[in-house]
Image 1 (spheres, rainbow, N blue to C red):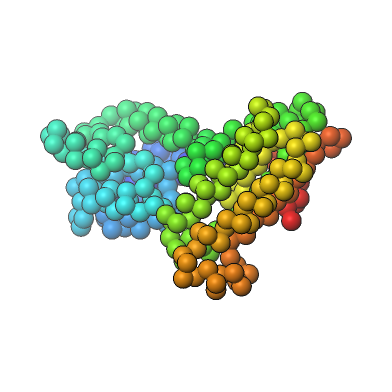
Image 2: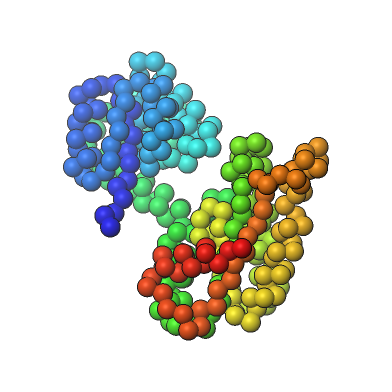
Length: 285
């Protein structure tokens, strides 16, 4: 499978500069989107979800500062790295950009090789940050895959549990991102507390996805852990709804719900991490 390309959004009104950067970064192996107006930059960031934005400050409509302010105020785009590209050299201009959350600042005329290195370094920092979930701070992505791979290769007699939180997107659409993040943090804390109570020091907890948790346990702990987690979560989820909505929510099929699955690894063969993940998710009920 080909490695997925990092996406760069260039917001630059100088067409010659925009075309040059587009061609240059495509040759470097990036997927590149280019727009020439600030409003278009905001819209493109929301739709394309780039991994990094190169943003000129002097634009024909709204300036780059306003673009950055809007992106930083929207939860969908507030973590995207921004490199300001500008003719402004004053310290106050640089400080203003940094105050708005810019990750870097480079002035024209610029060395394109220097810009390439700044882009690379910024993307590397972002990729390192994605090893943990931004809401729960639990491991995800490569860290979880590495742990599951160790279980497969070692052939150890381990046990795994998956805890799936259903209908969180519906909850988020109705009550907002802050409320849904509170649910995720509370669930992760309940799971971590339950893990500590098992007293097994080698236990591990992380994310299979944004709403799926995976717990690594001693196989003998699986039944007790499953019952403990199920009881605590089922008793708690309704309390995340405002009091005025709880009676109505109780009768809805799309309310917050939890599904739990367990998998004892003894004697089972898996072709790889993805095969193990499929087996875990299939165990949910």
